[in-house]
Image (cartoon, rainbow over all chains, first blue to last red; front, side, top):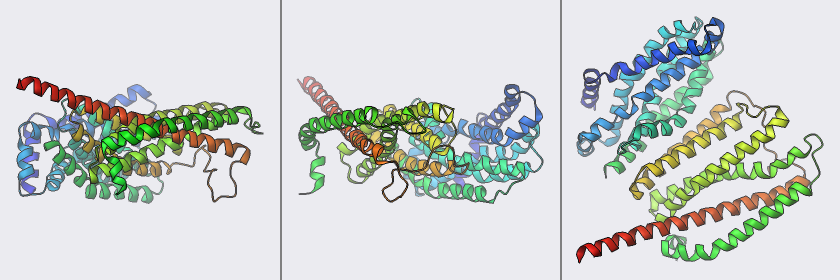
Length: 218
Length: 246
């Protein structure tokens, strides 16, 4: 599993720019927001936590179809399915690799982009914490969606349609933590709920994703 | 002898063909009685005036929107566990019906909300969770139509339905987090003192029965169509095979 993780990381960094793509998209989304909403700093600072969360979520979505599609095309996935490690483990490794190349950089970049949106100074810590806790859930849920659509020719758009409703609870609680943090309110309840969703998704969804993969490889 | 016997496609075609006209007639009867009764023979509400009458469409369609998803969930489980084809086809048949029920509930709710709340739409927990339910229906139907092989499609959509149900419930309670919103709480429960008055309650009950029967009739009809389509497909394949052999 560790090897698989390292292999995926190497592939992501070396081959074809998938690594920076999500980050660039996130940057552009955040830069475009003031153009759409007007440069009024107080308005920007009130919507900043939500915009940063939404931007991170969309950037995460962008690279989901790469989780299994390339391996499915060249037959690696068939080999992995017959390998001695369980398919659930493969899913976990793949989702972890996806998180390290998208979720983690997005989390680290978010405070920098917060400056552009005039995020209140209390907000940075909680934005960082909420993204760090929430993005693993985005990667695992995304891996499930990618496993469902792996065999399809035009899976990309369908993948977004399937995955976005599943992102709703994570987005609500994540943005709620960031918003309350920015406004200086108590963050414990949404933070615990966000952590619960992530823990539940990481624990259970690999089984669903592996089942979907088995069906698709049949 | 067990209940599963009736899941055999041939037997299903037999009994559903006999049941379908009865259910359809009963549902038409209930719907016409309930709606005519509700629209013309109930008094206006003392505060809402005649706008209250849209309840006879709004409440039953909202109930069926959720019930259709629950039925799809059960049918998906039966397909995954016992692999009865009729079950998978019934889940597939129910999805568009449930989606339309969700749309009706949202549209009638907006029409009702405009005069009463002064707005077509608010991000109230109940309204929001219905919108999310609609998105789940979209995803489910899109996945069904995207996959060619029927068994693979049935498997994958069943898994999506299971996972989606968990997330739909999560979303339902997550949106509660904001505020209580404008929508009123439950007022049709059997165990509460303060409920809708009997004058409105009885025609509403007839309407709900009508919607349930309507849903059953539509699902039966659509499932029968699916089975016939499959049989046709199989026959055509067999014909092509035999032509190739000669």
